[in-house]
Length: 233
Image (tube, rainbow, N blue to C red; front, side):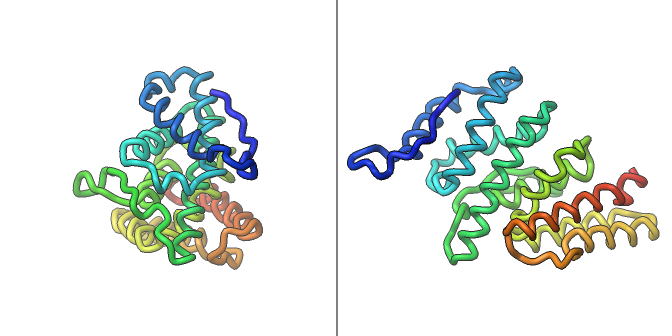
C-alpha cells in the first residue's frame, strides 16, 4: 500500500486527491480483513497509510457512508490492541487526528463527526455512541486495565486529550463509576486525586496547542506511574 500525497489542488481540472484516495480505500478496505491485518508487513503498511490519511484529510471521514466509516474505525480499534508497537502508535496518531478535528469543528459551531456513530459494549449491553465516546472508553480501558506500553504514553496522551475535551461529561461519569466500585477507602481517595490531577495539574487549559499537549503528556505519565489502580489490581 503505497501512495503519494503530492497536492494537485492548484492544477485546473485535476481530481481531488483526498476523494480519489477515499474511493480507493472504500474499494480496498472490504478486502483487508482483520485476519489479513495479522500479517506484520501488510498491517504496518495499512496503518501507515491510514494514519497519514486521517492526519491530512480528517474532514473526509465525516462524509463516508456508514459501512466505509465502520471499516476504518474498526481497523483502528483492532490496531490499538496490536502487539506491534509501531502499529499501535500509528493508530493512536489516527485517533488523535479524528478527535482533534471533531473538537475543533465543534468549537467552531459545526457538526464535525457528530453524524458518525459506533456500536460499543456498555454496562447495560450494546449501545450506539459517537466516535469520540467510543474511543474515549476504549483508550481508558487500554490505559487502566490492559498491558499498555509506557513508551507509547506520549502518543496516548495526544489522542486522549481531545477525546476528553469532546466528552467531558462521559469522562466524569466513567471516573465516578470506577470510584464507586472501589471498596478500599484509602485507594478510592488516592484514585480520585490521581484522576483530578490528570486533568488539572500543570495549569492545563482547553486547547490543543503544543505547550498544552506537553503538559498533558506529563500529567498522564505521572498518572500511569503512581495510580493506585496498579496496586489494587
